[in-house]
Length: 230
Image (cartoon, rainbow, N blue to C red; front, side, top):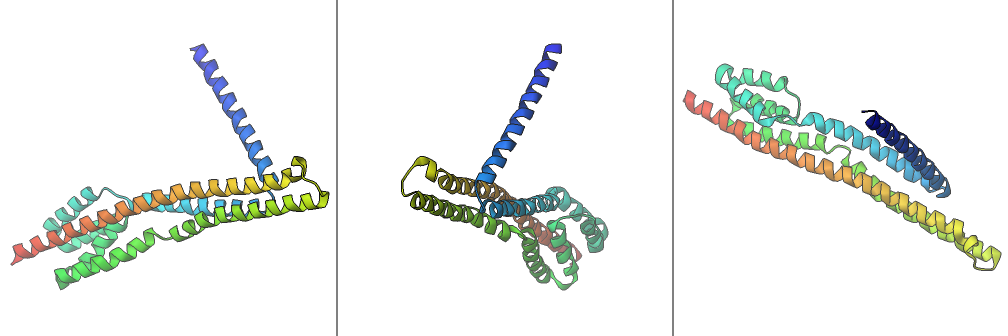
């Protein structure tokens, strides 16, 4: 047991040292990257903040749809439309909101229910996709800023050559470093944000599919109740 404890302590120390070394390396490269590293960092921070907000929102939007539909059907059978509305009010997420919008039009006929569900489904989809356009914008901006920094670095390298009137690796090293670092950081930021973006799109697609499937079941349930009454 003592050996395992020593091994665990050693691993923690190595991890801390590696983290410290990585952080120092990032700081050094960031400073060496020049002025265009600042807007790239700003784009990354803003994009990451939006990703965190979308992750939290979408995690709350997903519910157990099958269980919710079962509760709504039981409420319709036992207490009617008003009882089903209560179930929707006490359930979070876009599926419950769409159900509630449809149940509000239950007295006007199934056509009105279907139109209300479709209209409110579009509104809920807009809420789910809120902020994604800005994440997409930052995905495009990060490499563009990096490439702009690359151009700046190459200009600095050629200016150094012109000033020294000779070509030497030492003379152009700083300008080339700026060119490569800004491109690297811009691409890394874009890849990180793109991963989040694709994850959110896939999650929204699943939620929308749940809304569409469950809406059909709601209309079928209301149709069965109408048939029983007639």
